[in-house]
View 1 (cartoon, protein in one colour):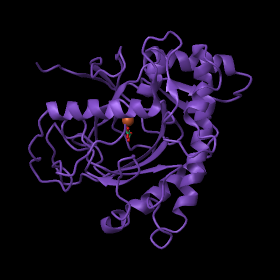
View 2 (cartoon, helix red, strand yellow; view 1 turned 120 degrees about the horizontal axis):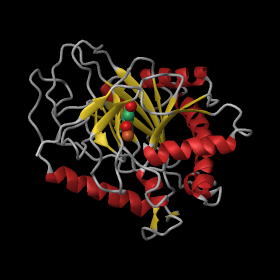
View 3 (cartoon, rainbow, N blue to C red; view 1 turned 60 degrees about the vertical axis):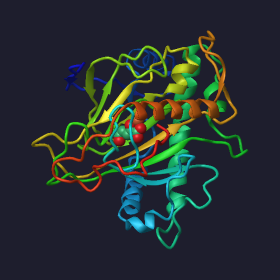
Length: 345
Ligand SMILES: O=C(O)CCC(=O)C(=O)O
Ligand SMILES: [Fe+2]
């Protein structure tokens, strides 16, 4: 059966301002809880990360993706969600590879993954500074969620931030969706196919006018592929950070906070067909941390086991689908390659 999906073109994701954070804390917690129990997505403004630092992160990303493929391929995606991939992330929802390339970076165990200074001088220092800034802001927001859920304030901070033992799994993903100038794609192809993130909290940076992100609220139970049928457009603005709840926080909140399906569509007829760059920071549970909600709706599970099970579910989802044929005018990335893999998130 084909389900008809409507698209809601209104800017429909609430914007939450963090100005005067300490004085407005209670109000901000209410707004975060309201957005996350209903939609699972919201944007942040007046968030305190300087515009200049965000611009620098995008400049870094563009410098990296402008390197020849054989240079980027020196640091390929490993089994731990670190490194570079191009056209290799298949979503169970589509069976096709996302029309993109991405670079995954973490705080620990990154030996052999950082591009060398000869290939891109200063990459590691600039990337780590940005990751630290986004993690710091994430901690502020995650503390609000802990308080809103009646959990100890440090639950998600201790749950995601490495205290110095090298077990962080949080990931910065630089994303480059290629220009689709002169290319036609079938309706099975997406810049990023519909999916829910596996993490606690995602923070996503976009550039003005580089749109296409859509979200579909209505998921009731963590881990299933069911969702509502109205896709809401999220405006692309460089002054707002798009935040969403991931599956780990949905489970940690006994399904109160929603990890919502989202996707990035290809440009429609008449829309700009140039490239799109975005940057996502995934706050992941540390490997040995136990995830369990206050009401114990689900059995306890460690961060490592959670990811393992989520990847298994994705693999089964992909195996159950079938890979479509290539698009009408062959796009460089369009056909899913034999090396296509499942990445985390
Ligand atoms: O690029 C975007 O806007 C979204 C990317 C995303 O959802 C992901 O990488 O998980
Ligand atoms: Fe995502």
